[in-house]
Image 1 (cartoon, helix red, strand yellow):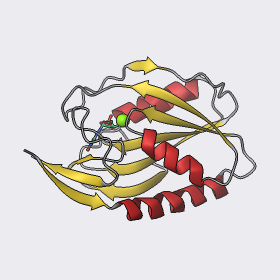
Image 2: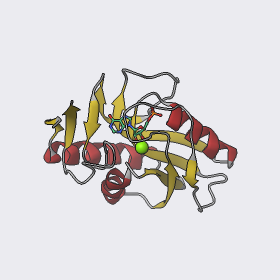
Image 3: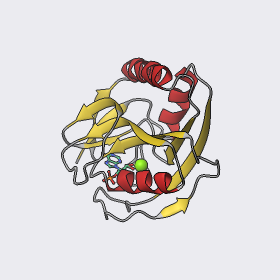
Image 4: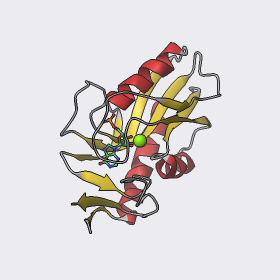
Length: 172
Ligand code: IMP
Ligand code: MG
């Protein structure tokens, strides 16, 4: 059985998400912000983040799957469900669980810009640097790690561990 080692406790996640929400609320004051969460991994992060924002927002979801049941990226973005909200002329904030190679994110950012968004920025629970291949900017990150496979707080390994309230390092 793989071993789970705590990376971020629940309380620490709360503090970091609150701090990020305060920054985002200040940065987007008097703007029309649309938060687009990437399913499934970002669903918990999105729910916590948006309840900490002090500005009005619209939300939507986009479902991408670039991973199979393992930890290796295929590099290709497949869109399983697109957003429905009109983002033309709006400021968009992509809400992602974890940025790894950056392929998924860079393609999503291009996709949203092509829909006419005024601006597209990215916030991620985890910015993982080890395997970054595409030069994407993570504008807001709760936590930066160099390496390792993380689970919990929405993040999975082969669809497991999403329900865990803390973030763990999965050691094989
Ligand atoms: P990228 O395209 O390589 O940046 O892959 C990003 C996506 O892969 C994330 O949205 C996650 O769904 C998944 N992913 C990458 N690293 C991890 C990890 O450490 N734990 C869980 N999911 C991960
Ligand atoms: Mg994801």
